[in-house]
Amino acid sequence: MKANIQKNNFNNIYTVINGLFVNCKGKHISQYVRISAREEKITFEYFNEKDYLSIYFESEVKEEGSVVIGFEILKIIKSLNGEIEISSNSDNGLVTIKDSKKKLNIPTIDIEFELQHPFGDFSSVELNACKFIDDVKYLKNLTKDADVKQDRFKNILMHSKGNKRFLIAATGHMVAFLENKKEDDLEGKIYIPRSISGCLNPLKSLCDKEDVIKLYNYETYYTKLEFKNIIIHSSYETKEFVNYGPWANVEVPTAVVIKKKELSDCLNSLLLLKPILDKIEFSVVDKYLNFHSIKNSEIEMKAKVDINKGKNIEKYFGNFSGKEIKSFIGRASNDDDVIMGMNSIKGVNIIKIKDAKLVSHMLTMKGA
Image (cartoon, rainbow, N blue to C red; front, top):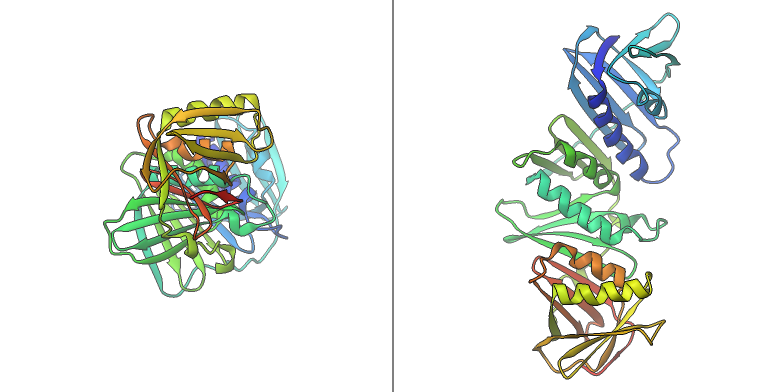
């Protein structure tokens, strides 16, 4: 095998593969990369027991073939510059990787690895790539502090029903719903494991405004993503995803409305005084929303609000941190309304903006 690849193309390869590597599920025994040169293309395939990624670029292929190396070798290749030449010698079992100044001889891995590709019936959907990546990034930021031992909190579920499509993510105490209008015929769920969602942010730099991402959900418990010259697929178990059903259609019988800017100003002041607010207490008295840090009751902020429906909320404890609320309302514009309320029958607190909803278990509640 002998082929060339440009450094900027290799950087794209490394970034995307590393995104999958650091987000793959659990500790895998095997982490391999297969490099293949065929038909004027050089292809890098990353695989382990559950995840697979393929990315190719056009290349000057001087000799066709393939080699398998360890994942960590990619970090060494990343240190090279300009045009990179990759070649293998079957006689000595080495792969030679060089640029104009450096030359590396690396042992290849002699392995017979049977890749398990998705099979069986599937459903699929095409989505605007830039918007989908931004939406997933938004949800991942909301849930990034979830317990790393709870794999299911790192996954995202897409649920299409009627004329709406929801992206749903969760932590141990809250569920976030992001709503989009649906214009296709897809109904049902597509499971997006964190090994796939972890690769999406690096793809944003490769996006043009009209690009699409194709998602496939296989009945054999695989999800596959296709984007330009990239294919990613991962196996999953449905138990790895949070059961959001009880919170999906929760109404807000008692709520107040506040402008995003006013809420942000209050939160910024609270966070400035105490950067980590575990939980915040809210109360509404005479059309003013009072914020209190539960652990620091002397910190108090006020903002004028409109009573949207129901009666005054005398006092209730929100099971959200200031950081979580700030992150959630970040996608709203300053003049957008933020609805903050509770449903005492369901025992939940709710925050809503125009296209998103955050639902959390109540801690305690007085007056409703």
